[in-house]
Amino acid sequence: MIKPRIFKGARDFLPEQMLHRERILAIMRQTFKKYGYAPIETPAIEYLDILTGKYGDEADRLIYKLNYKIGTKDEAALHYDLTVPFSRMVAMNNDLPIPFKRYQMQPVWRADRPQPHQGRFREFYQCDVDCVGSESMLIEAELIAITFEVLSELQIPNFLIKVNNRKILNGITQFVGLDTSFVGEVCTSIDKLDKVAWSEVEKELAQKNIPTASIEKLHTLLSKKLTLQQLKAALENIEIAQQGIAEIEEIFKYLSLLGVAKENFIFDLSLARGLDYYTGPIFETKLPDFPHIGSLNGGGRYNGLIASFGGKDLPAVGTSLGLDRIFTAMQQLHLLEEIKTSTKVLIGNFGEATLEASLQLAATLRANNINTEFYPENAKMKKQFSYCDKKNIPFVCIIGEEEMAQQVVTLKDMQKGEQQQLSLQELISFLKN
Image 1 (cartoon, rainbow, N blue to C red):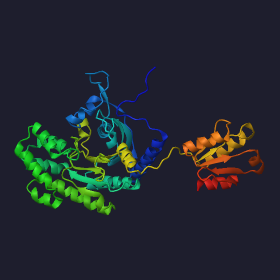
Image 2: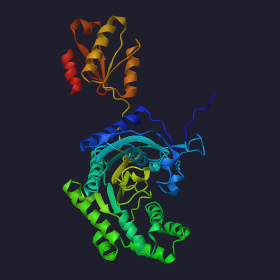
Image 3: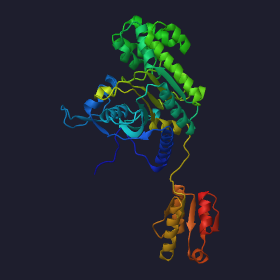
């Protein structure tokens, strides 16, 4: 006997969870297509050298390596995200229409510490939407608009899309007296500010051999909560920072034109996004009223990543909506009504005498896109009604010999306990409406 158990950080999903998850995915998919993005898929397994060296040392340690040809060029791993595999795919396909707009919805794996209350797991779904081949800030604005539309459709309240730019963080690194080689180190540490106190970030920066004077100057700048205009003045002599500020101003102008509510996006200088491949605007969505829940989405521009695979040096930008984070948030916000089935009606089983008529009715209802079950056993009605109650199936169709003689169907409303006799067309019309 093997004791049934599940791998830490992974989960089973019963119908009451999957039906909600499918609805969330359907809303995302519909929104992505509305903006002209087409679906792709890449393998769950990639060569290890494809994945490593793209995220940063901390993230690289979380890659799930497979026990397969260890130490050879064929060593493999489960993909950590969808961005790097997508970039590899673009580099291998030179005839894609440019700009190339794709969405991708697949599980990813990270050897992270599971924190279910925060929506953090080892296996989880990412829902990515990316555009390759355009430098226009319209794409960034479009991705933020997609995020706004999806979260609004899901009725998630008071979400806040935070926006920053790696060029600004690059400029800040120069401002505090550091070489540009420290940008990745600084960003990785700053990115933890929404989870830990400054003292922890300060300690980490010191361990990276960053001078105390630079750390103090960085803290002073971040603690001022500067607006874009104030930051523009503070970094007036740093060209790359000015470029980053101008890009965010352009994005914000487009967001207003695209109908994104002003209360749902903000500039945040402390936003860093810990992955190394980001090169320009970055953004992620938080729930200020529920700070323990992690980012609902995150993304940004990653020019240069595709070229690292020997492909054309194509600019790229994307964002990833986290199905599991969103699902966890909706659970904790009590936005998920109890649902156990997608079945609308159960047809009762009264044995051989009515079997043919019952199966024909089931086929007719399904042909009219009405989700229909036929109870497989000739059981007592009490047992069949109990099955409906347990699954929350709203209606039961009863076809006995009397109904067959009168060419009607008895329909029972399981919630109200009421029943009525209807013709076939009346039944179809009622169930559809």
